[in-house]
Image (tube, rainbow, N blue to C red; front, side):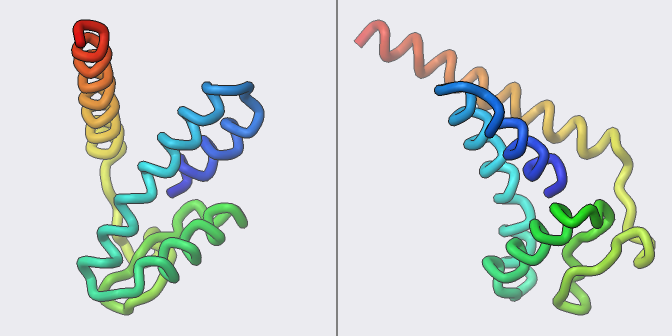
Length: 111
């Protein structure tokens, strides 16, 4: 969620189409906590909104506690994830989207 918040802020400083692309990428990152909250039987809109607000306020360790059904400090809860896992997943997802867009561009130019 923190990355999405920072990308949104950065996107506001960019001109035109670049701003729209960065905002769309930031919005796509919110699918992860939304899906987690939904699968845990929580209200995803409320949870994601509260999580976003906590991250904007600087609480970088805030996360969804599915056992308690609320936002908690994940560091205090001893819920940690290696950086390599997150960065690899993000890189793979980004590369996949870029390949799809390139293929879509080729198909559109031939059609």
